[in-house]
Length: 286
Image (cartoon, rainbow, N blue to C red; front, side, top):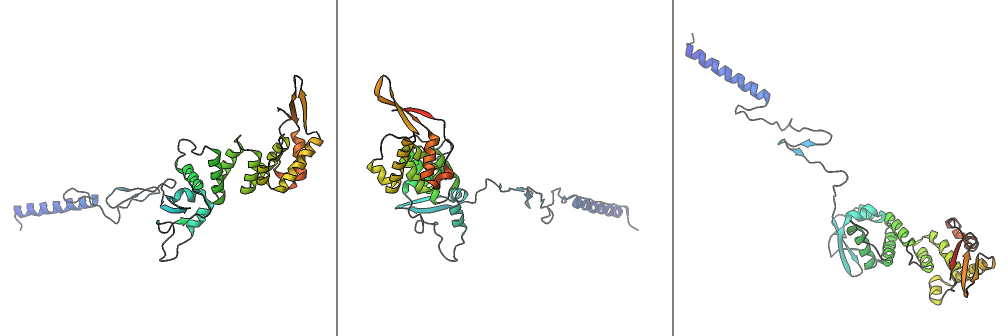
């Protein structure tokens, strides 16, 4: 028969064992610390994952987490090292270029100064304008001069930066410094047919004849057709003038833009679909 001391010791041991069992079930050790089971502690949800130490694992943002790298380009005799992100985002050409897998064991072009991606036929000023557009336009457009816009038009057309090209076309078309001769030349060079009919109308309305330099830019066939259009516009009285009463050597001109556009459509039927609606008849002075 157990003594009272033995009974007390046995009761204390049972109580301690029960307490440990309760603590273990509750997730605590006998010292009162929380026990973390690596197999069951991974708390998963749609937006977050908890690591084994209980801290929440950070999730990559779907829109603004860039897995980017720097790419080296050779333009003429200059090296440029720039972020790939902008090129892939805005250019169909570069998206396709960087999606091509590299041959095993071969050094990838663009990863070093010794193996740059060479942009043949591109001028340094054109590439700099493109990079300035990407990097320096945070607080306002960094492309200001007509020459820069033409450079941006050139490289955006070559490498299929569709949205940048559309913007360059819009900005150049609103520049008052662009002459009709420049618009026709650029339209042929960069495939902008909608510029040609209005430019031809302006040349028909212009009083000065085509000079030698302009003729060289346009080509002999275009010059001959412009001369025909100018004659037809005046013969049909789409371009008329009257002398100013108090100064007989000064003339007031009037233009029938609809009629001049009909002449353009007649001589250049290939641009018929690009002829815009004309403005009202305008009065001009010379």
